Length: 227
Image (cartoon, rainbow, N blue to C red; front, side, top):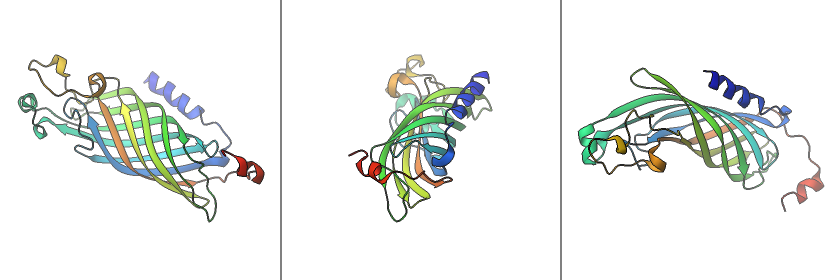
């Protein structure tokens, strides 16, 4: 709990900027897990994901964002053809609360302008923490590494929308409650990605509303910026 409090204090204190460039949003999509039960199939057993986002737009390329998400993850050995998985017959379902602070980079200039549409692909990364409520009623708290890719579209002066695909690396092999192949009494061909640690991921649609307008920019500066 002490680690969580420290993380929250850092996350909240970082976006201490004038709120003239702030927007709030929500997202909805699907979440899935990759690990010992599901070693390599994206969007296997898709479950619900919903989230809220705060963005501070430093300028038209750089963004600081804080995200909070609720996910459900599940997997079962019976869905796969690996012989050992048929014997093991493991299953898990977990609810997960995810909080992250990330730095986002727009590859193209992105602005909120009336009667003009901007779009840009983007990437983001930072730090995150996950609170996992397992199906056996146990609770674990993990620091995770977040990464995301997506594309966004401005809708006038206030609104934007886009698609985002987030990845979370957990640094451990405990998300599914299943020991890795090295600990299995029977050899298995199933190996999860990156040294057998578990991942979870979610993808979906987001929409944001600008709660404060950008300050007026100098036209000459705007015309020459990023050329």
